[in-house]
Image (cartoon, rainbow, N blue to C red; front, side, top):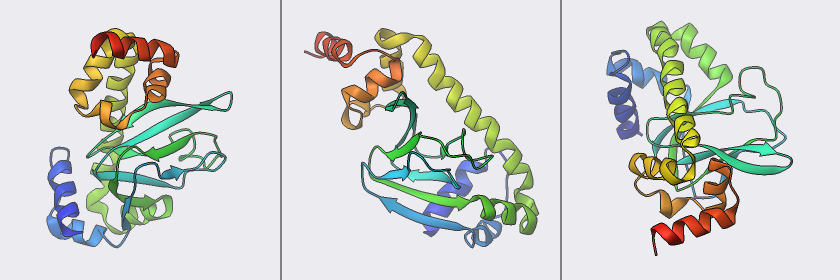
Length: 192
């Protein structure tokens, strides 16, 4: 666990430098989890009650469109993941969050988040900066979607070099809002 908290500190130091001792106090509110590929972390029909900081691995966020889940976002090391349509107000959504690979992450409940701000005030400024980083990373993914499959896919591969190992053709189709046949044809043309 200490290795993960030290990686988190090193990552967040780029936003706000906080002493390592404070991160050790933060551990009281965090739960370190490791799950297998395919594990559903936020189920459809439920509210998301926690955020997840990825230490290792990748997660996907899937929006529900007419009962079909389409990949909306891919998250990797140092990303913070939660259902942004559900987390803030506690409303139930049909969206899901799934482990795309084996994932190690810290989980922080909404209640824990409030306690961190109350009991560890040194994290207050960091808590204000993390949403900006989340928005920047989501904006990057939206730019890839706008580029469409032919050029956006290669930008995604440069960001996530092992993309082809953990995303299905259905995931890619959902992300770029095309059908699976189009993805299959594209991948066979580009990677015979």
